[in-house]
Length: 118
Image (cartoon, rainbow, N blue to C red; front, side):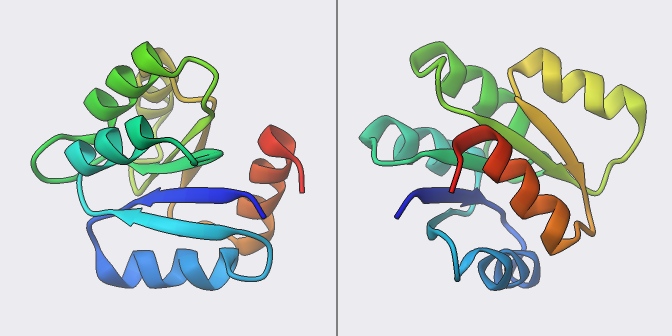
């Protein structure tokens, strides 16, 4: 089973993501961008769902660092900021795709499936 890293500092958002993912994927959590970079470096992650606004290190900085070391690792921005400029910043940082919160389970799972398959 493939493993998704959920980089999310908000507990309720993390619980929602685990509900969406639990049938199809294993998952791990990072509570900030620094933890996301550290877990990505340890390996065993197939895709990252990256919140953008997080403490310690934000999702854009974490994405750039992860992509530098692991260019093949898909990262999906997951943020409450739904403006086109936010999307462009996420893609420029290295994100493969962009989802705005609240995200539907169908859209989230379809996006993951497109990037890493079942």
